[in-house]
Image 1 (tube, rainbow, N blue to C red):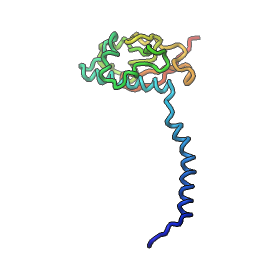
Image 2: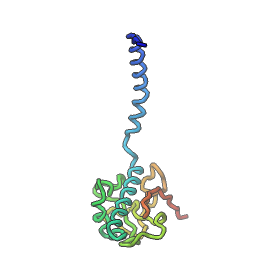
Image 3: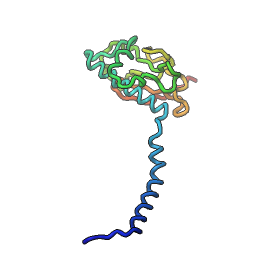
Image 4: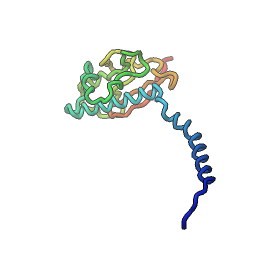
Length: 165
């Protein structure tokens, strides 16, 4: 059986495609927008945690040295921009390494031990015993009173800050 397509059928098909395109174009444009700074920060920390785990895998299951951690995980990082929090001034870093993990082996409960996190310390290779979290949260416009933290098992999440009364 042979079907003949009339010009009117083609016109109707084209009109339907134009309408469909007009509906879908704004939706796809929204999906292509840049991630919010808080989400980009969380992603950066997740990538840093994965780089730490790769480093540990190559170094007898030990984490990097606290004074050189960014330098030591750099070979495991594809884009060095993940070492910079998108909310801090250019030239600053905004992340710190948990000094308690300095050259340590994997902890017993890695899903509960902070590895890298938002920090008020802007320098490269910042480290402390998990004390330099921004007091009001790093990304207050998105999630007030929360900071981003990556854990020793590789997962990252937003951590609520307990306000002191």
